Image 1 (cartoon, rainbow, N blue to C red):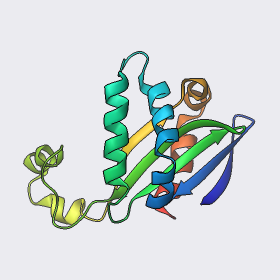
Image 2: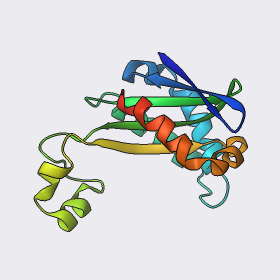
Image 3: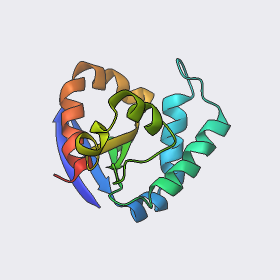
Length: 148
């Protein structure tokens, strides 16, 4: 675990970088945050969607270069992000085929090795604070996910 403390809107936000193994140990915790973040409007995702997220997370945590960040706001879980580096050769499936169709062979030079953010979830109680200073919150999390 690699905690970092960031100040935002007068509150103490803790960003904790998790390895794949640390993420696997917290899958149920992250799934709870996912349910809170996406269960209400505008997404209305149900238990099946949260279960599917937990299954994807279990697989994704084994990807080379995987990283997750868990955010807490004054000790209360506030959200998380997951990411990994885009592998070579550029993958197929999921949305990769659409990206390749749009960008062509440029994906091999422009996207391979880039940080690929997969999931971002913000708990409802933390959204109001995030919307006040969204750009600095995003900038604070990006280096943590990237390991910078």
